[in-house]
Amino acid sequence: MGEQHPVVSVCIANYNGADVIEQCLRSVCDQQVAASIEIIVHDDASSDNSAAMIQSGFPQAKLLV
Picture 1: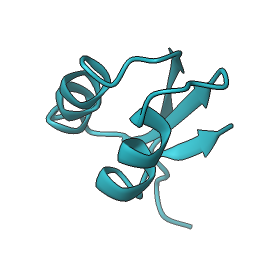
Picture 2: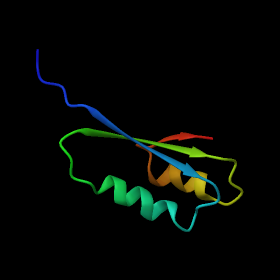
Picture 3: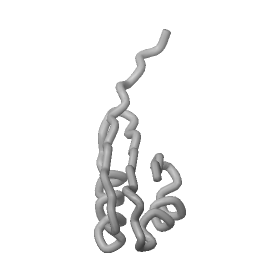
Picture 4: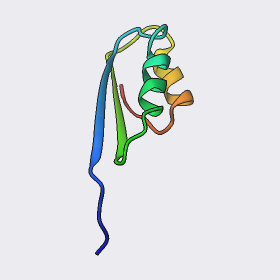
């Protein structure tokens, strides 16, 4: 049985964060770690386009709306 690496879960809360969420997610994605990274974004009913931007620009992130 092979060695399994732990999963690092990064949980991000978002509310109308279109001006900052892309930079935040890019920062997480750019990390060099020996474990797999899971990104979970909770969007709290944003009225800007941040949820759509997350969904289209970061399909690897789990978006909870």
